[in-house]
Amino acid sequence: MNDAPFERVVFPKKGEVVGIVESMLGSNRVMVRCEDKKIRLCRIIGKMRKRVWVHVSEAVIVRPWEFQADNRGDIIYKYNYTQANVLRKRGILTI
Image 1 (cartoon, rainbow, N blue to C red):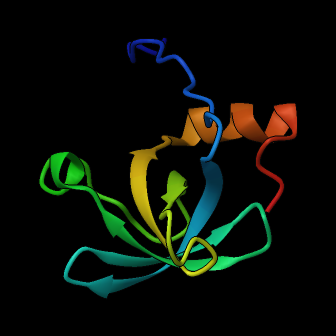
Image 2: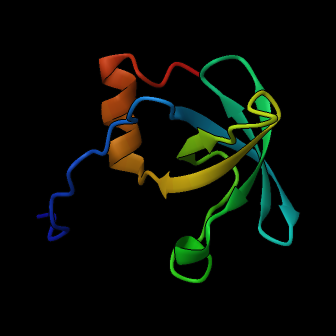
């Protein structure tokens, strides 16, 4: 029996993109391969820094910066394994 509570899946809003963490660079910097076929240097936002641990090959939501949108962004949400599978089934996460 699974005692884990059900968590709702957060879908990306307008201006946000789903991606997979490729490598950890240190100092809250992460390389993310995004669904729009771009690799971005992202930073983990302040409210997530010490509360949520991000690892390689996990699914995240990235909000690209207004300037350098093709190269930089902020990680604003991390999906767990079950949520990432729901995204794959719905065709949102294909990489």
